[in-house]
Image (cartoon, helix red, strand yellow):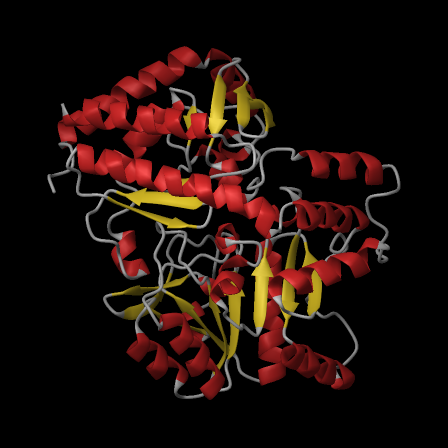
Length: 451
């Protein structure tokens, strides 16, 4: 393996691509100036400036994998809303359900007839019998953590270093020099989160066992694959060890499948036969419309029901008025019936394998110290030779200038990949021609950097 391109080549590409971006997008620049008068950082949600471009790209329309910006430039989208649009932008069954059901009311704070059907579909796919709906995966994670603490009587939770579970305060704890610390990036937090959260490295069995041994952890909240620091896969036997260790210590195991749903219609847990006590599923469950779900095993749900029999009446801190709405259930039904099937996933995974192999060929062709990894329809490459085995290792090698240069190069040539890391998704609208165009552009980008 050779070396990564030099700093001067990366800097030159970043500067050139910034100039090209400004030339291509005068309307977005104009809209950015107008929006800056009223929006924090000039955007409706502050992450929208995290692409690293001179100003945000304003999108006029999106359908399938086709995105058109305010200046009329066209793009092929492999980011897909960082999984929120995993089945494509405005998938036809979701649009049809939205049009049909929207005329009958969006929310009533009462269940709709779709509730029974959606519950059955969730149990069929994920193997858990009892479910609740929230607006986001962050809300779902907050809720299931509360239930876990309530039924176990334990205050602490355990997460893996550099995990991401949405905007859940107590999951913003990481390791620094081997000691747990609250993430300094968390805005406005006044509590010491390390009092309630234990954190260990992914794939570290000894550290996991030691953290669970005192019997004071209500639950482990984990992605079966770490996905927010590149993609870190579990070592052979680690998830089986995690399941055994949690069961042995009376700790509930909650799997956050919001990104790992790329693995198959039952998520990573379904594809690999895992048996969690609870499961969270967000962004793509309603085709990109705000909705999420969390599921409970029969035993966990039984403990919840027994707890509720003795609970003091009053505010629960769980649930919001718009959770479980008629429109959420209608759209979830459309997505579950049309896309959460082996038949729907098979071509996505097959095409993702071609993308994985194509990126590997680019790496080999140019002698790069990179690697590529895939989980079902999700593919990522990292600009480091050895796959990291945990979040700490991964965090040290991602978000580098070379990643930003590649993103900017591809974006200016009509190809969108995830800005936070080098992630690409395959959806039903993605074709082999789209994949080939991405691979050709990546090949040219690397060739320019190496030269």
